[in-house]
Amino acid sequence: DTEVTQTPKHLVMGMTNKKSLKCEQHMGHRAMYWYKQKAKKPPELMFVYSYEKLSINESVPSRFSPECPNSSLLNLHLHALQPEDSALYLCASSSPGLDEKLFFGSGTQLSVL
Amino acid sequence: DAKTTQPPSMDCAEGRAANLPCNHSTISGNEYVYWYRQIHSQGPQYIIHGLKNNETNEMASLIITEDRKSSTLILPHATLRDTAVYYCIVRVVTGRRALTFGSGTRLQVQP
Image (cartoon, rainbow over all chains, first blue to last red; front, side):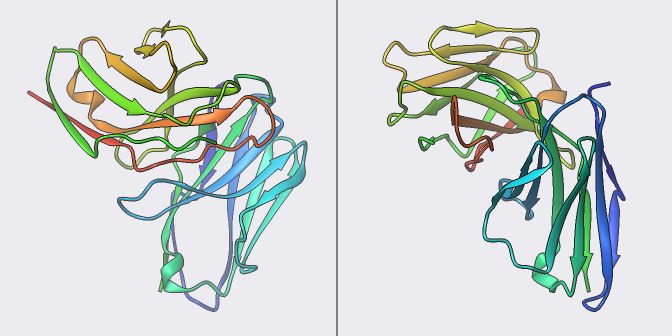
């Protein structure tokens, strides 16, 4: 199984809502990532978890809260988002090593109204 | 990680080879060159990577110049399904794990 599964595929939420994005992989990877991608722009790194510990936070606003409950699962909790947070949110995983490759999910398309 | 420069867009005829260039003149000795692509509405997909030597796999070939300051991704027989944005990324071998994406090249394969 070389898949990274993200749910939901689409999400519409109001600025006062609380929602969560979910990412799952069963490749035994010990690094997991959240990227944000605006339309016609490259993906931008948000967070990196390594061995279930947060290792990189790219100065992301606190309205985005990542969680890594176990080595297979990564969540992104959303609260009080702004319309400019509307984007494609991509999850990825990798197995740490000298020439590691990232495997990406298909993303969650988020619209904040 | 070293910065990369790619042309914003390229066209290629179906069945012909697509040669996508990348400049990474500030690359250091402990940095790999990675190529990913992103087909519309999907997540990025790994294609190939290399350190010094040329590499080939079932998807593509990677040619790295001897001074390592530039590389070329070659899709030998482009199909319509190869239409995508192609990202050339330089990544340090150890240390910071994440990939930093540049603007990429939008490849349009024409029928």
